[in-house]
Image (cartoon, rainbow, N blue to C red; front, side, top):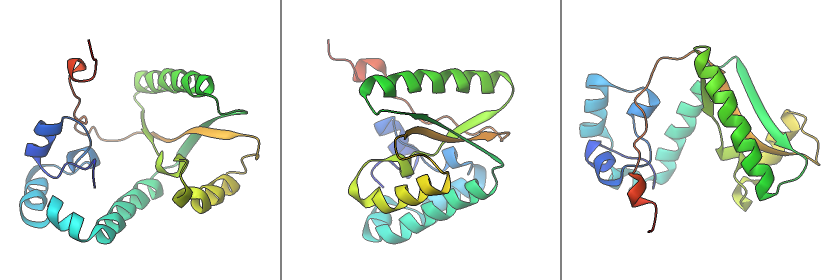
Length: 160
């Protein structure tokens, strides 16, 4: 909920996060949902329902995907993470040049206690050896273009 932007006003205010447009919802449908059905206050009052809807959307995305890929390392150092990030970006650039798109699926890789059981199930399903750390998991394929997520200005991030 914290990073979801419920309307254009929030997108313009925070210049980060994601909203309906990044999920492919546009036009009159987006207008109707943002103005009649979805608000930050309602999501915060019922975060379970909001979370279930997010899971439902993600499940539909996963079900519509034929190709998944992952990048893993034998250790989990900061250098490993940076190197894998560079490899991932090269894969992303190559995919784009081939007319493909990549969508990271990262929640299951988050390292906090609430994710332990789900992460174990995920690693077992993919048959990832215990001595490996999955650094990136993503789906790859052909998709309709969606609106880019908002970005803050560099000056907002760099302290001079």
